[in-house]
Image (cartoon, rainbow, N blue to C red; front, top):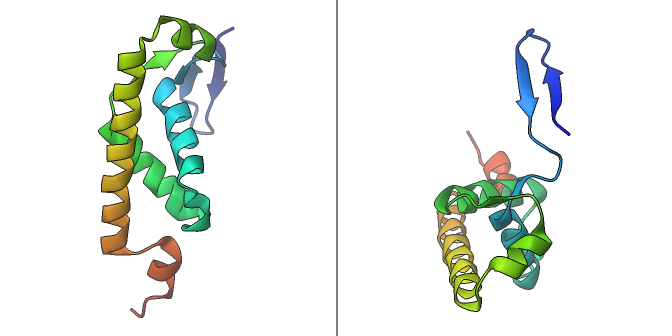
Length: 109
């Protein structure tokens, strides 16, 4: 079901079906859990890291994770996982250079 909503500015936007999402988001969340990144970064930094990672990856919008798993070859799944791992490594390097949100907020101005 398509859902429409309106912002306070009176501009209407359309939201796609509730099930439509980027499959790389799932892969990212799984890899973040495997690497236990929640133990290394605060919530804001994890959000920044997620955006940085996803902006490096191609979009792969799907409606059902089950269908994706059925049609995805083992080689393609492995390649996608490697892409996510490489993107996380790069994003972590960028965060190491600039510091986490907590460090940034505490830095003297």
